[in-house]
Structures are given as C-alpha cells and as structure tokens.
Length: 279
Image (cartoon, helix red, strand yellow):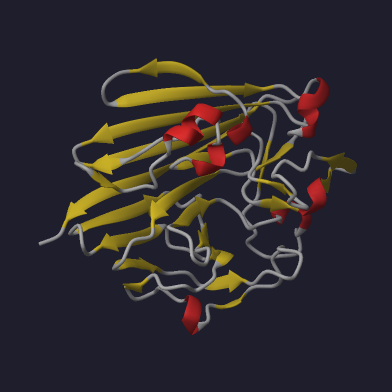
C-alpha cells in the first residue's frame, strides 16, 4: 500500500486519520493516515514535462484528475528491510522499464525509516538517483489529521501560491488573513488546497478536547508546506514538501525548491511528530 502509515495514536487518541478496515482490505492508499510523496510532490501539469531537452509524459494517476500527482512511490509496493518494536525501514527500488516509465522515467531507490520514541514519531525519507542521467527530484509527506471540534493550527510562511481554475499554482502572493495561521487559531473552513513557501519547518496542531498537541518539526529541505482543508470533510492535511506544486514546469519561479540529482546522488530529510500533553 505505497509504504503508507495505517494509524498513529497516543493512547486511544488518533493523532492522524485512522485507516478504515475497508481501505486496508481494498488497498486504498489515499484513505490511509500518511503516505510518501516521491519522487515529486503534488501536481505535474497534464503529466508532461521537459528535462535536459527531452519531453516526458507521465500517466495520469489520480482517478479523473487531469494532472499527474504525488509521484509514483505511493502506488508501488515497498519492501520491509528491517523492523522491530520501535522502528521500521522500508525500501522501494524503481526501474523505468516497460510501462513503469509512465510512472517515472528515471531509476531511483527510496527509503523510509520510521522510528517511534516516548515523544512521538520520526520519519526519515531518502531518495537516491540510480539513473545514468541527471534526475529532477523532490520529497514530501502527506499526513492526514482528524478534523474535530476545537482543533487549532499554527504555522508561519512567507507567501502562498493561489491555484488557478486548472488547479495549478499561479504566482506567489503575501499570505492573506483568511489563510494565515501565523498565530494559533481554529482551523475553520478556509477551503485551502495550496502550497506555502518560505515555511520555517514548524507547525503545531492542538486538540483542545483531548488536551493533546502535535508538533511538526521538519528539516530545512522541506521549505514548502501544502495545506489541504476540504470543505465539510472530517480530515485535513498539513504536508511538508521540498518544492512548489508543478515546480518542474515553473523554473521561472525563484525558490521553487526542486532538486536535480546527479547519478548516484542522494537527498535525505526528516520530519518529526512530537506529542505534547496539555494541562
């Protein structure tokens, strides 16, 4: 199931959205608690991009969505390399042979290391190019959180990229008041599905009824944050990512965050989810 997390609890309190038995039985990765975004985050417009003078066309891999989205790692089986009571290392080796090239045209190796401690969860993502060519690359996580009464959110970013009618980002603007969570406030219904840039790598989610806070602390590689708050649903997403949505087609945007890996080069970064009991 794409190396996904099925649940994350503190005692009997769900800190991430719980994966239903139905989703587990039918392999519905999009209904899990969290899954990796590798080797890119969010959308690639119409599944098309040009890199080093070569045109590439990806599969449209998200139902009837008009764009390729979230990479291909979430749609592939991962291998358990090692595991015990407090940690698990998952490995995915992708080779662009046959139809697999429509998922991603470059060879890579990805790893996830999940480590539990009394304080919470640390998730380390690693992406290594195993292609003979340079490869555009990005990392991200897509955790879902329960949207319950009294949930509050805080994070700081310098700008946000509104989406056009095609669900692709336009130019960045200062964060408007309705989308600003620089000060802790109730989540509300902001109808957000946007990428924030200039994120400082820190976010905090507070569940007042349960007297629990969840602190998100991401390495500097994750300089962007996608926040998704669908209207009328019982979940929301706060996604640490390395680059802007559709960055591969927007090299004109300063600080887009997309990396280029040389053959054999690796990028690694952590996200920590620390639990805090409130009085």
